[in-house]
Length: 84
Image 1 (cartoon, one colour):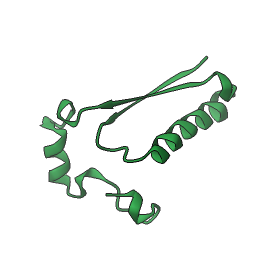
Image 2 (cartoon, rainbow, N blue to C red):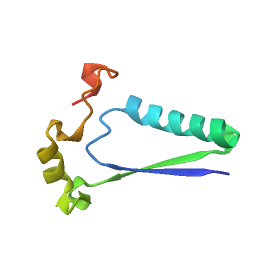
Image 3 (tube, rainbow, N blue to C red):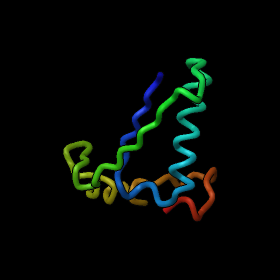
């Protein structure tokens, strides 16, 4: 019985659809790689307050700000309304 834990900043998931797609994607990955039955795969999403994250010696908000785009992808593979 695989258990997948996704830890993500609390301001990243903006809809139930995104949450559902994360769960489905993680379940499909475990099925594909480990050949585990999706009916026995648990997926847990832990949304951590952004103020409790850091990277490169900076708080997540400052790190994202320094990157620009608030750390969100700007490639052409996502629908514009799905990316902040």
